[in-house]
Length: 93
Image (cartoon, rainbow, N blue to C red):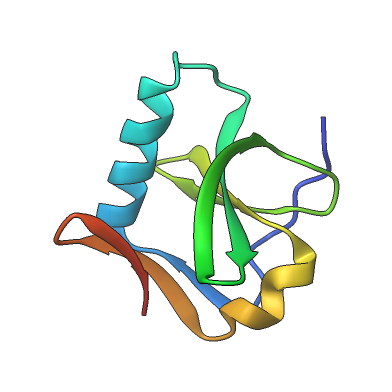
């Protein structure tokens, strides 16, 4: 199992609404408890994919359930941001 890191000081975390939606998406992925949502940077901005935890990932949890992983290489991109879900979409605020 990968070593988990606490949330980096650069990223504030996730809101309750984002956590709920991430859990919902993971539940639809056949409930495989080892899967997480991964935050990835793309040329068009940011995106999310279903993936597994990797060594060095920062893991964000909602209601004690790990839901989101961010690679340490992206911590600077997330500086001071919180993941939110509203009006049918995720946003970094």
